[in-house]
Length: 214
Image (cartoon, rainbow, N blue to C red; front, side):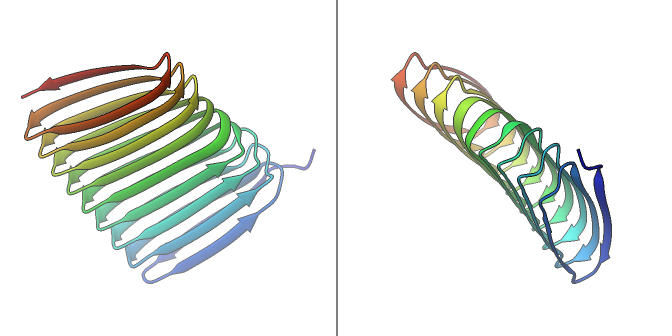
C-alpha cells in the first residue's frame, strides 16, 4: 500500500483552489480567510481519503467531491456571511460528511448517492440558512441541527434502512422532507414560532416521528 499523501493549503483573500487526488490515503487540509474564497476539490478512487476545510469571512464557496472511495471523510467548518458549501459523495462505503456553519445567509448542500453505510452531519447556527440533503442507497444516516431565524431545510431520502434525525430551534423554520423506499426512519423535532413541516412518505415499512413545540 502506498503511504499517506498529505496536502496543507492556507489561502488569504480572493483565492481559488483546485485540487484533484486519486491516491490511497489522500488527505487535504484547507484553511481560507477573507472574502470571495473558492475551493474545488475532487478525490476519486482514494481509499481512506479525507478533506478537512475551514473558511472564515464572507461570500466563500467550497465544492468537494469524493467518488468510488472507501472510508472517505469530508469535514467543513464555515463562519461568516453568505458562505456556500456543496458536497458530493458517490459510490462510497463507510464514509461521512460533517458540516458546521455559523453566521448569516449560509447554504449547505450534501448529496450522498448510490452508497452504503454512509453518514452525514449538518449543523447550522444563525439566520436565513438553507440546508439541502439528498441521500440514496443502503444504511445511510443523516443528523441535521439548525438554530436561529428563518431557516429552511430540504431532505430527500430513497433506499433501504435509512435514518434521518432533524432538530430545529428558532422562529420561522421550514422543513420539506420526503422518504421513498423500505424500512426507513425519520425523527423530526421543531421548537419555536411560525414553524412549518411538509412531509411525504412512500414505500414499505417507513416510520416518521414529529414533535413540534412553541
